[in-house]
Image (cartoon, rainbow, N blue to C red):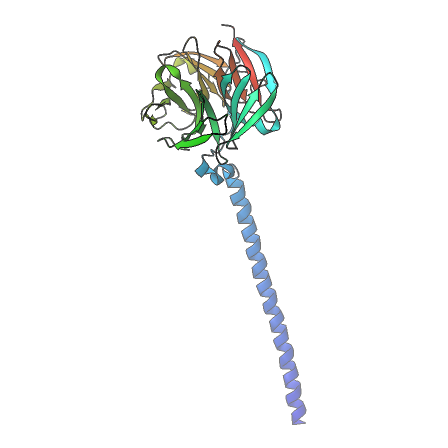
Length: 329
């Protein structure tokens, strides 16, 4: 009988071992499931927190700036602003930003994703040429100087695209002291002083009481460290804006151009949908509110030699566009 007893004991021990093994497997499975659940919840939390910054963070090295929320406040719409003509842009230019006059019916534009210059013909109502000059990035402004097109990236980097319309195209890059934190968007050619003007949109290195416009000397290819003009944010011209606004957002320059006849400086504000005019000496002259139904997000501005003004607007549900604009007062 003893052998039978030993055999039965081994069977029960085997059964107990298998039961314990199953219990252990279940415990491990529960622990793994719990860890997966915790990881998933943590991922959702992080994703919701970072979603507003994701695009800017991925491309910050190429000058991509994370977009800011549109302000709920808006300048009073001015009845002095009239639209003479409108050109809807193709889908490739829904995020049209800078614009510069080249010659009659022909303008150079960029959009804030691609390292391309788009040559747009307003008579043909079409893009007639695309010029690749760099990697993808947040390109905001353009300026035409003779046969050279200068392009501004939001991190303050300048691109000199020489002989842009020919097969001899060449590109040089110039780093400035401005960075992605300043979000540099406005660029134009100051022919009288042989320089480029760069207008920053966000953080001003010198403080929150003004927004600086900086000069890039085309002879030395150097940027001046101090602004050549200052937009005084304490000026009474901004009194129509809500007092609830945080300091520094009274004016968010997105484009800049010099009137060929008066030498006044025109600056678009993409955030507040505004148009600021400065006298040639830098004092503030007039601030116009633009109708956001027509000017969804004014990003660029340029003039024809006869003083005709054109403003480029980024699209959203509607296409981006270029508007021929007049001021009646």
